[in-house]
Structure formats: C-alpha cells, structure tokens
Figure 1 (cartoon, rainbow, N blue to C red):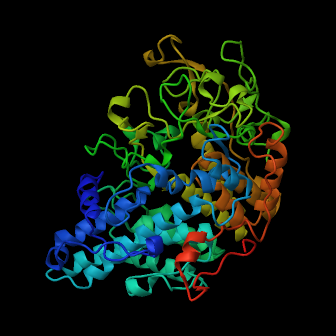
Figure 2: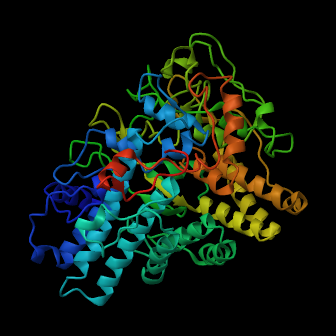
Figure 3: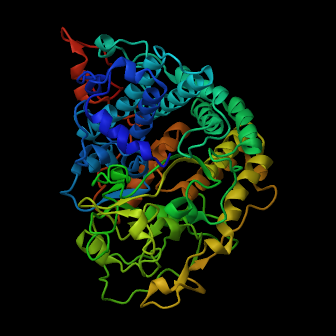
Length: 601
C-alpha cells in the first residue's frame, strides 16, 4: 500500500462518495452517487478505508472535487511545519515578509481566530474524521464480510480516527467529538466542552487489541503503531505509569507493519530518504509517492512544497522553512561531546549571514553534534549530494536578514535519485519521502521521559544513550566531496565539520535529579526530532513553552527581523484559537455550539 489504491480512491472520492461531513468540514457535501450495494461489499469497504488513509496527506475533499491548488495543502500539512516547528522556535517561516504573512502571525503568537490557516487545518483534519466515520457506518451495514475482515477494517478506521482527533486535540484542546453515531444533520451543533482524551484512548486501545502485528501492505497500520500512539496519548495526559508499561512492551516486542523488529537504523538519514524508508525505525509513516500518474503532486507531500531552497538552487521554489540560529546553536557540543543544555546560545555556531556567496566563508570549526548537518543546510557543508550549500544564493531574503542563513534538509530528495523520487508536476517540488509521524527514536525518547518521570533515571539514560550512540557512529558524519566540481562522484573520508558527540557517562541522570534528567531528555528530543513538527506541542505539554519561547524571541530577534514582537502567553497560546469560520457555521439563533479557547474572545 505505497499506495496504488490512493489514485483510484481519490478519484472516486472526487465524484461525491462522502456520506457526511463535519462543519466546513462541518458543511454537508453532495451525497454519493454510488449505490449502497457497491459500498457494502468487501471491495467497497476497502475503498472507503483507503480513502481514510488518503486523507492523511492533508488534501481536502470539498465533496465534489479535490482541491489540488496547494493552498489547503500547506495550511493543513501533516508535518505540522507551521504549527509544530515554526511555532516551536525550530525554524522561521522563511521566504520574505510579503509571502504567506499569516504564518508570521502564527510564529509570533499574534494570530487570532480569523487567520485562515487555522480553518484550513481544522476542516482538513475533520475530513479525515469524516472518512473514518463513513467506513465505520457503512461497515455496520455490510453483508458477506468475514468477522476477521470486519474487525480489521474497524480497527484500522479507529486508529486513523484516533490520529485525526489527536491532531485536533493537541492543536485546539477543545474540539467536538463526532463519531459514526452522529447524524449529518446534527454534526454542526455538537459542542466542544467534553475532554476527548478518553475517546482517543479508546480508539487506539481497540486498534491495538484488534490489529495484527504485521500487514501485507506496508502502508497499513499495525498493532504496534497503535500501541505506540496509545502510549504517546498517555504521555500527553501525564499518565506515566501506563505509558511506561506500554513502552516496555513496544521496545521489547514491537515490529513494523512489514515485520521488521523495531530498531534504530544505522544511518540517521535513512529516515529521510525515499530509497530507505519503511525501515526498522518506521512506526507510523504517511506514505508518499512521486509521479503517480495524476499529473499533480497531491500524493508527493504537497503540504511541504514550499520548503526547498530558493534562488539559484536546483529546486525552483520557494525558500520557506528556514531553521533558526537557536536550533543550530543547540548542536554545539562541549569538549566531552555533550550538549550545552542551558546556555547553548552562549556558544553560537558561526554562520554566513550578510556574506554574499561570492565572498569567502569558512564554516564553524568548533565541535558539533553531526545531526546538525542532516537537519540544517548551511554554507560550505554538503547539501546531501547536491554540492556544498552556497549560502545567500539559496536564501530568498536579501542579506538573509528576514529569516536567517539556513535551509531545511530532512525533506529534500537526493540528486542521484531525483528522477524516481522527485515530482515536478507543479510549480514547486513534490517528493516521495515518507512523512514520519512516529519513528522508533521518538518512541525511545518518549519512553525515557516516562521513566524519568517515575524516577527510573538509569533506564531513562539508557534510552537516551541509544539515540546518541546512533548519532555518534561515523557513518552519520557528513563528509566532504571527493571532487567539489562533481559531487555525485562521491564523498571523501574527511568529515565536513568537527563532529564530536558522546553518550552520557554512567550515573549522569541520577546525579542531575528529576528536573535535570528531564531537561536532558527534552533537549535530546530537540536534537533528534528537529523540524519534524513536534517541538511546540512538546513544549506545551511539558509546561515550559512560555519560558523557552520567550527566551527564543529575545535571542533570535537580535538576528532576524521576522519574529520581532513575538511573545508567548501561558494560558492563552498553549492552544490555537478555534477558527472563527467554524464558530460562525455552528451558530444558530445567535448562539454557537463551539466555545472559543481562553484569551481569544
């Protein structure tokens, strides 16, 4: 399921298959033209389920035709590059101030309920909810399907619904729960006053209990993906004992959907290369495909189409998603190879801001965690196999003053395999690189967090050191090109930077105590999972967003102009405003069924 049905089902959806919808998403689309007899068969249910998987990529179905313009795509990108990483201080919007200014407001926490990005995300995720509910509703009417298959269909649909609601919960906290029992006519009057964590738990628990350990299609979810998502849910709820018990099982027994024992892959970058995806680290990934025959990049991570170097780069567009200096500084290591947990910005990484690409520049010579150069594109360092990053020539803002000197890297396809894994059917690139929602390194670090919260510091340190040991393997160093004129000729045996990273010595976490051990784990998540959409949501659930983000604004605003005036207010900015469009749609006789989040009225 990498995924031939995607194309077929998306086309079927476009002619009006959806039975109900939630608001604008909770607006009611055209009723389907296919007969009930067609839908209630094995193949019909499977097609509906594939449509529910298809919604993972953030493409919104308005009930009559697919929106392939891209606008909804980046508003609702499942990578959460705006809501998770930019808002988390890992990256700037990039480009220039006139392009997609709504993102700048989100980055600075000045956005209100009228910001269209929020509505785009809301309605697209609810479209996923709608499709899972359609599967469950039609499945209840199906005939001639074995109990085994019925259970499998139901468990997959409930996993997906759990995922969509997890997205809604962490974005807005207060969202209406609409399941297969809710009639279309009453969907728009459902309230958002109920805590839906227990229902998310129930969906993932059902999926864990009823899904097989492996699947014949790699893109389908399995028992261990559900267990991992349930454990993540417990972590968000601060149910650390329940989370630990599950993580113990997952780490000891878990396998991927294609039957590989969970393990860290040797090469960090294998998680971000279409040629090596669906590996032993892949817990739950959105399957992307390039050149799928549709003539669009809808299935090729269209949500991240803006996030490539600009100017004279080979990618054409668009200069967004520039990693922050704060993030770059986080990869500085001390003389022993450990990170500076509290004062990393006092040890800044040298950059080329204000230096033209024709002027000489020597990259930073200090010790660095090698993950910096698989995460951040910086001047003078190989940009995968595309040649050395040239600096300003690939940055959209003149002088790099607006959003800094760096480029994103984890979403970039390789030059050597671009004919297979790049998709140029649009004005900006698409890519076949899968989007990791949960990978095994994430599982280990979540498990470490649960252990530390319970006082099990030795085990927590063991998990963190597994992640650091992988990064320390010399195969994860970036090496200089053998021939600078022809990078594809290969790499030398000379590291491109002064890489030094070590594991924490025995007893370190115990010596740090609970607060110190947790801070080390939090920092490791920043290093390992940077620009993967987690950071803002992590900061909020840890209760440290106000301190961390306001420190970020104070520091980063001395370097770039884009986030000046940014400020995070605890109790308000922990969650985004309920979109005004949805409040309006749910209003009857002057009263809305949706309650706005605190601070946005």
